[in-house]
Image (cartoon, rainbow, N blue to C red):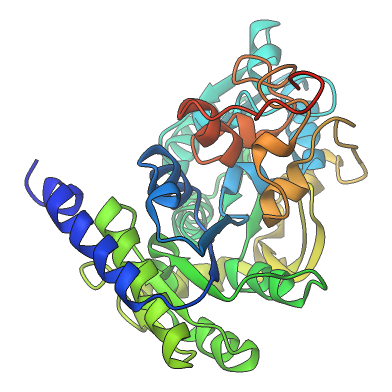
Length: 370
């Protein structure tokens, strides 16, 4: 396929790997903060092809995976209300809450619908004036502009039966939390290309300087990732700590200013809980008071709900990179894509799902298999 196959050329991949081997003189540890990048790295075996000493840590880059458990329970509580339609992207339906998931609720009669855009949910509310329509608005900065535009459109239409259950999270504060951790091993980052297509990379420049880590804005294809890793390793070998842009075909330093303006109009920054990790200050978005009428938490009064992870799920350790899926005793046994205990095994961007689909299994321990 034109403009895609070029970024999967095995000859160029081998050349980039050879150049990496040539410039690398000591061990380095990098983290990608994007679930799409994680899947490419694992599916293509990039982490296993890198020169000895270069290690990839898979960070909290899956938006579905970091959505707090209590938000899912709130969504399910709303979905069970009479006269309510809960709408969501399809990848949220099988993510387990405390007791069940949205797909199971739909099977039991709840009106849960998959939409392909938040505007579909707005249109549904317009066509269904007797129903309360709620859109589950999750994700990183990537999806925030579309969700903001949905709220603005609903306001322009004067809809009183449309709300959003917001659980937006921001990447730079999560990177900061990783870097501040006492056991941090990360020496450089690959930044998510789609997030930077919206926000640019100016937010990353203070991080690179303060923590002296190179940050490379990177795309999602195999050659993107190999080049991004090479750029980061070159910086480390040269003692530099800058923000560089590998994904030049899609990302500008200032990002998409119109999208950023839509975010600023509708949302404000707030503290946000991350599933399995805990609360990170100023790491999320919530509706401004001007658009508070569109807040599903206020409309349905479910903000008091709390939840606890399954005791066998180590999602937090997976999301922060302190463990890999094969370190989990439940991985591949009680936790599989058909019977997931946590979100990283469900989402198409989850690290556990990436390992499982790539056929990576736990190494037998002494005395038997896990």
